[in-house]
Length: 394
Image (cartoon, rainbow, N blue to C red; front, side, top):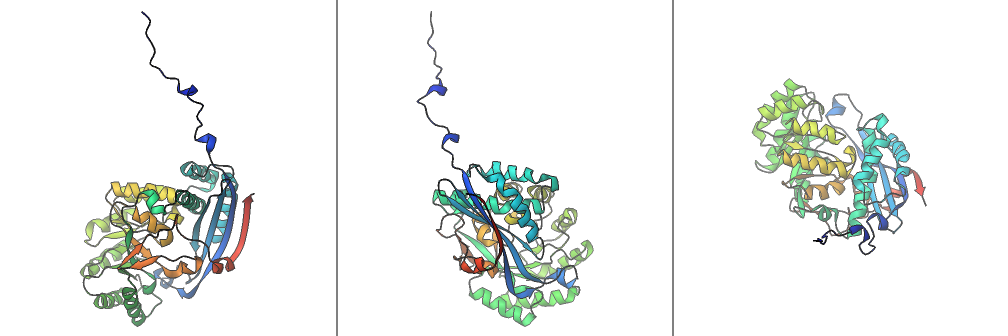
């Protein structure tokens, strides 16, 4: 007896188109190198210990991507003190690899760019040169969807608790630090971070004591040693700082001393935070899997963009780590808003002149705007600070 087949031939069904048939294409890329001058040279512990010079400017590498169908996205990378022209040079090498590609295929394109520069490594300057493109592609995708990037990613919250760093640098006299603390609180900041790591530990403790008195016992307070202590010093100072009820002690040791950071995290009640200097998912995976910190502090422009940052976030959440991204709040607000656990966002007003739009700060939190994508565009002032640019494609 003949049996009718239930098999449907999908290959011949209605002549429908595939995703590849209707894909958009990257048509042009504009790269720009911009130097943002700082009004006052900035010093942290790396300067006082003679390892670096004061910070006077920041190099930004902007990528503006446009597609055949008229969609646009903007992203940036940056470098402090040195390396900006090098990142820009490598970005120029990478840019042609994106022309003609579907801008939706962000993970594929990240991998393509990573391997294009793999002969000089898959971290450091190589990944930092990918960041402007990867971030621009995510901005483009969210704009095309008509959503803020946080909403495209699946936001957990519409605002993120926000702390200020720029008022507590070591070049600032203590009386001015205390004035800055008062100004920050009145402006709506939800936490204060103080730089430490001076050669004289007593001087650090004096500044910390004064700031804690100014803030009161319960206002969120963090400290940042910028990698300037050895293991014994970090343990000794960390124990003395327990009384100050700190949210975290940041970068007490060299950024790659995962073993030392783990020992501190295990021994101290005060949480340990680190990760801002790491430049790939692989490095952050070592930090997270090794239990070397309580807070991770990835930086999207440093790790290669939003694509690897999302991988870092997923692993951190799985391992129960908290999140406090470094710098670039214009990008990290959206990513922090999508993290399952309540994160912290670092506030820096330095980047304000670069953009036409500003973020809203109130009640200790930074709020996601209703603007699609990342929600910023380059200002006339930023264009005036441009020192070089190049164009690829049409």
